[in-house]
Image 1 (cartoon, rainbow, N blue to C red):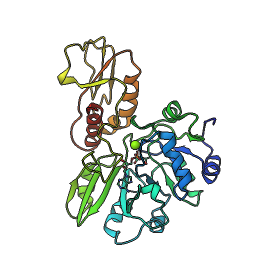
Image 2: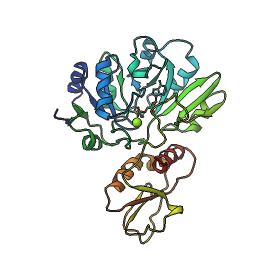
Image 3: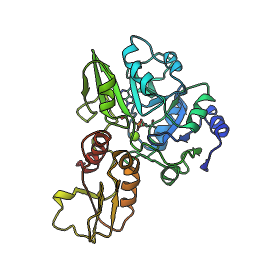
Image 4: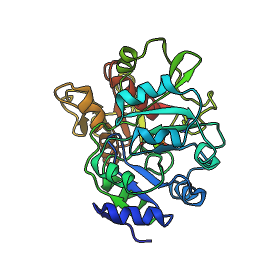
Length: 317
Ligand code: TXA
Ligand code: MG
């Protein structure tokens, strides 16, 4: 298969209608999309990503008016969050209808739903008569792509078309939320800050991150964002690490003397840091060093999602 990169929405729609795979730009990260109602097309996503097991996928829609075609039950309270922040970086876990194939939800009775905010992907979603199932468009175990080129570098030959919508503006995956009783529960910290949820939800907002001990989300493995190098905390630099063999991922300011470093945001903006995070990890991965030393960013706003991804780069196998 030859993978093409372009901005032709009609071509992308034709490929999806024929059961093919298209990488799509969103404000969070690029997704690897297929017709969510076609189990064979969805199976191709797992093959292309080389996922060792099926892991539930988010379905993407053009408009919130379509949500009721795919979900049922008493979902009003949770949908208020969608109606407030969609199109945008938040995903809702809602009780699924039968038209959503089991391969999309890994047999779970809830489906993850999101309306992404990107003009090209909105046009694409509006031009196909089905939702798009799409995980992040990276091979299993690698950081999510934030540009079309990232997707090409890792999935060329495995995806029919890459819709090029430029660099992702948010840069970390969506915040995933659901309801447990009357509480709003955050299962993945992401592009919508917790503070935004807290100010707009009347009731308790709890955090219950996906983890290996939390099998309701089999895919959210603890170690999920690892570059190919040894990753350590800058404050725990091992004795064999030095300014020649170690690259730094810094929040605001470089450290004098280190040749290899990547600064996330010189102005100290967490939004900019999130948008540049995965690009930074990829860049460090290509440098001639054996160790990458990272530091955490302030634990507020998008800092929670950034630090979550950074912690995953550190996790032991
Ligand atoms: O920003 C995003 O969310 C991107 C863009 C492309 O929309 N998508 C994304 O998908 O990050 P993915 O598959 O890489 O991560 C989705 C996470 C997975 O960890 C999966 O286990 C969880 O959502 N998930 C999906 N459906 C679920 C369900 N029905 N119940 C529990 N967890 C679910
Ligand atoms: Mg992913």
